[in-house]
Image (tube, rainbow, N blue to C red; front, top):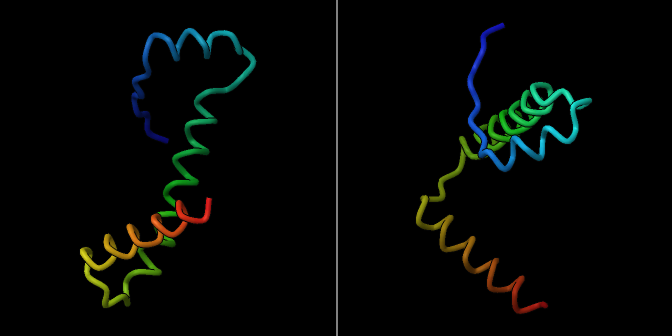
Length: 71
């Protein structure tokens, strides 16, 4: 296993210190693993897409406007 260094703010470190029983390295590993799994699925899903990035941005904005309008 390799090591990486993660920087957090002093405030966050202080708050983390309030929970010494928590294995923060394991929390970070789990979060990174979850994000990687999501990115791999997203990449696989979009590999065959013919939609351009601009079309995707436009569609995203339209969907956001519709969601906001429903509220």
